[in-house]
Length: 401
Ligand code: ADP
Image (cartoon, rainbow, N blue to C red):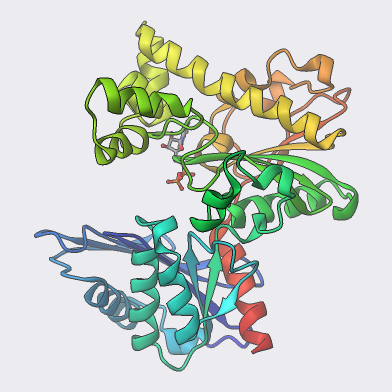
């Protein structure tokens, strides 16, 4: 099936996985998608989906290069053929663009070097992102490769929101500032919300609540981010599946001094043994709800802490924006969990935010208004699509190259 509009191969390369999607950047259709998992372990796996057809392979995947070769082999074997799909660009998700990258860029050796240089700011993410870029460029040398940064949408945050109130020389020496994350999603959702509501983007103030395994909030004024909850790293802000979000930094000092915990142990605690998982034992909200329904007090508290934190950010960003035209829920939890949505906005009618229980009920696969007609702020569920957003940016950059 040849197609003149072309496709974009979107690649999200993690430390032990490669997620990919072949996207039609015009229609948003995912022509194929898949994931290579447990790279570097004795037993790996590859899952390749084309429509309802799933091809699953269990085999060792020693490194990212082999993983990507297997994926390209599957495109050849079960389709769709990449030659026929006319791949116009490969879009790579890169977590940390630091102070350097304010938008997507065509990858060359210099860009690779700069992504590498930013690794101390994102040691878990940038190195595998870069590995994915390197092997993909080697295997698909004739296609432009574009890096799309998770931080770019927040590159121009006002200094008031981006600056940590610490010694400015220390901050400058170690590039300590708030970079944000999930920017591709926040940008996509804030634009789609304005379009969905038929409002001009430049006159729309939106609070975006991206609630997935990772979770973040942003305040967007006229298409520009003016604040966001993630900071130097994706650890700050909302309560997440396994991450604490906001915490008094003195807790770290206390644990180091009094529990004898090392830096690595504290890192592990805050990133992997905190959040919903730390409080309830489960990181998936469906499981936390089940525990709470069965009477588990820890799970109930975890849900309260989770929704309370979101509510605090909504209030804070209402103050930052002054006028809030829309609040958008997105990602796994935001799109599917009506209890969290209701809990997070409960009692906010005095701020002009009022949910309609019937409209809010259930999972949402498409943009849906869930506030009452009387609500001053329109609350919507707006499914995110980071792959499509990356694909579109890749086409823009590749087209201009
Ligand atoms: P990621 O950050 O990994 O991209 P997602 O946006 O896919 O995460 O969100 C995953 C999370 O969404 C799950 O951990 C789970 O908590 C939540 N989730 C998914 N489906 C539902 C559902 N039907 N009800 C409640 N929560 C859900």
